[in-house]
Image 1 (cartoon, rainbow, N blue to C red):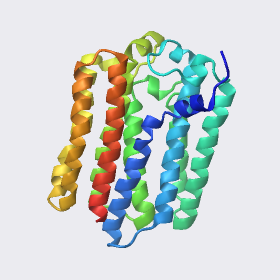
Image 2 (tube, rainbow, N blue to C red):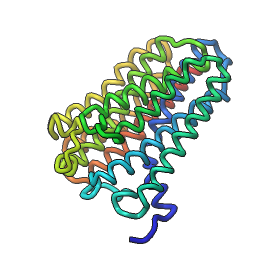
Image 3 (spheres, helix red, strand yellow):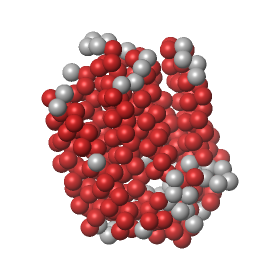
Length: 294
């Protein structure tokens, strides 16, 4: 096997998941502007929050590559080849890269703590990094126990959105809570369709994801609930923020993703649904966040 190329490392970062890091920051920043008043935009803190989210997302992707690879979970995967599982990169190298991104997230988070003087946020950051590692790492990874969706809901929904609002406004409001829950559901949808794609090899390797536990048919239905329920929030916010109505245009991505997931049978179809879902999350976060801000 030839050594991993730069393109392989970029692929290993799983760029299609990065919208999950961007969307909560847009939503949290928009909610913070509502809380502090028009024109009160702490762009440095917003940027640091984005760096934390980006680095955590990339770090957990590489950590997942490493942990699944050394367990042999990725040996028969149906999606793109992984660095560790394919042998393109040494496990230790992938681990170092994963830990490096966690370290970058910690540095950006520390700068946020210093800026806000809210030292208790150090504990939140430490728990987030530990949870990111233990998703597939350690002796009993909770990602193998059907708890992956709970992880992404809490950390890529609640913590990312509410944390972004808090470090800018010093408080959280109804906008941030409802937005956090909504984007958390979309993050769960991304993970669900990803695990539906891998349901056969995951079952064979003993990786008990939620998709494996409830089965393919129920998993597809749950995916649609995760992805479409957040638009109820859009309807509510449209009563108070007229621009929020434009977030309904994201259904042009979400509805095809649901149709493909419900009817699709091949890995390629589910990969397309994954991409559509990820970009739906990005569109949701950007459009609703701008509706708050403007």
